[in-house]
Structures are given as structure tokens and as C-alpha cells.
Amino acid sequence: QVQLAESGGGLVQAGGSLRLSCAASLRTFSSRNLGWYRQAPGKEREFIAAISTSGGSTYYADSVKGRFTISRDNAKNTMYLQMNSLKPEDTAVYYCAADFRGGTLRTSRYDYDYWGQGTQVTVSS
Image (cartoon, rainbow, N blue to C red):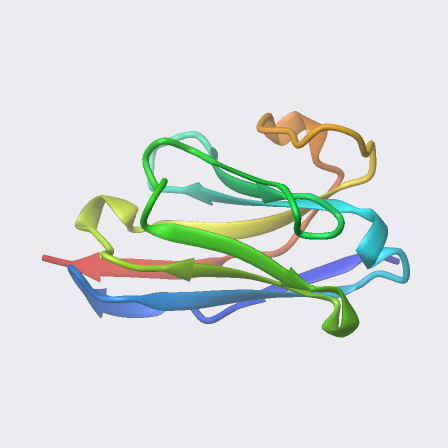
């Protein structure tokens, strides 16, 4: 059974930083593209970033490009999202997801097969 668990969320002031982690109980972790999404109250789940199996390829939403960095440690079955220069509009529940289809990095939430339970990030102004 595949389980993804996010951690590292919390309350931070605007301009601050947080590092999210996504730990996976997935034997084939190193063979899966992964992604981060977020969902603010009353809004649809939004793509943030994706990373390839080796970590050599990444893709970001324009809204976070230059501020957020996605990475992974396949030896630890863990993915990370380093978030810098946080803004109040970054406030949301953040989710990690695993793509079992492979191939190109995907941005549609419907292309991801497994999801974590989410971690709350709140940025105060």
C-alpha cells in the first residue's frame, strides 16, 4: 500500500521560509515522478512543482518560480519543498503526490495516482 505523508507546515511571517517534507512508503519511490500541489479555501487544487525520478528535471508553476525549490532524496524515500520569500497568498494546504504513469513531468492533478493527507501552511502579513 502506498502512503505519502507531508510534514513541515506551520505559521510563518511574510518573507519567511519553510521546508516541507514528503515521506513515502513506496518500494518503487525512485522510479516515480513526484509533485507538490496546494489548495486554498474555496479554490481548486493548484500545481506547484514536479520532479523527475532522479531529480535531474524539475518544473514549477509561475507563481512560485524563483522562490520555491523541489528536491528529493531517493535513499530516504523523501521529497522536499523549500519555500522562501513566502507571501500571504501562499497560504494553503500543501499536498505531495506520486505519478505512476511515468514519462514527462505532469501538472494536472488528475495524472497523479497517490496523495498525502496535506500539511497546512499559513503566511501572515
